[in-house]
Structures are given as C-alpha cells and as structure tokens.
Length: 179
Image 1: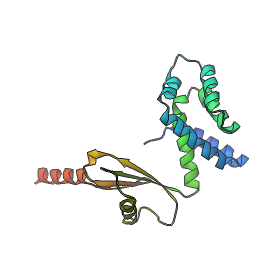
Image 2: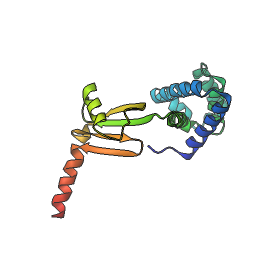
Image 3: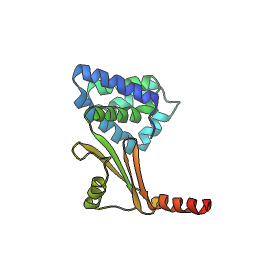
Image 4: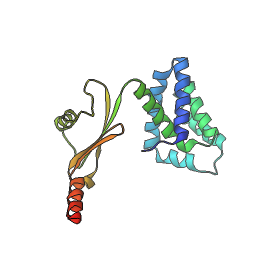
C-alpha cells in the first residue's frame, strides 16, 4: 500500500521530535495502539471522515478515546485534526511505526496463502528464500487470499516472490496464447 506524502511528513516530524526528546520507544508503542483502534473502530473512522463535524468536537472525542496516551501522541493527534488530516491518522501512525522499525533493522514480511498454514510450513517458506534475513528481526503478517488458489506470495520490503498457482496458470495461459 502506498503511503501518502502527508503521512510520511507527519511521521518524520514525530520521529524527529521523539528522537530529540527520548520518547521514541513509548510513542512507538502508542502508535501501534492508534493503528489498532483505527482499524477496529469503523464508527470512529466515519466520525473523523464526517465533514460537517467541526475540529473542536473531533478533538474532544479524540481526547477521550486517546486519553491514556502520552502528551506527545495526544498533541500529534490534535495537530492532525486541526489541520483537517484526521483521515490520515492511521497512515501517519503506521508510517511512524515503519520508520522506527527501519531504524531498528526490522524487516516487514507479508506472506499470502490460499489457506491457513502451520507454523512449520511458514518457517519452511521463510527459510527457502534469501529475501528474509534469519539473523535479523522481522515482522511477519500472514494473509489468507483464496483467489491465489494455492502456493504463496512472499513480500519482503519492496521485493516479492510469487509462487501462487494463479500466477502459474496465468503464465501457462499466456504461453499458449503466444504459440
């Protein structure tokens, strides 16, 4: 998923501030909570996207929802709402998480399969490729997508290994059309 320039700029600003103030670890944890809340709460997303609700009311609601967060995180949320960018809040938080993980050398790995796999199968797939550095930390996200029919799609950063049945069938179809 592409991240907007707005999200990248706010996240970089927050990262610069937290690095200077020594709060990066705490805000990192809080931004994970923000992402989780924004993903789970469809009503909150609708509320933030409603254009006829003024920023003051949105800030009041955000203060109540995010009252357990540090002053730095709360101030970021207020700033985002004041500038009319509340629709980017989840993306800003996720981009901050990504930037901190990049600094810490954490690889983001996405594995898409047609069915649920056992831990052993997942480990075997990860060991079978040189994209995943077994000596470093990685954040694994497993997606189930029945449309790929079988096999897997492994994405590490901006690189991808597509070993799905759907892709292989499409390649055979394309080969037949060319001959």
